[in-house]
Image (tube, rainbow, N blue to C red):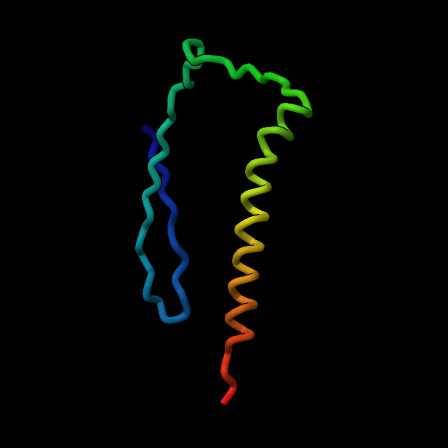
Length: 81
């Protein structure tokens, strides 16, 4: 462990005169990644990705349309008086 001392500069009124900051620098050993599994990227076809996304996009569209219809109907029923 290595210690490093830094002396602060005093401000205009001299409040921080004589104070010191002690920094401790610790060296960490290299990380051994030899026993970790490797990432294997597999390519998916365009058809596979679109078929899996169609349900999500459909649900998103349905709920967006339902929320818009509810808001529009509430706007029509609003009484201005």
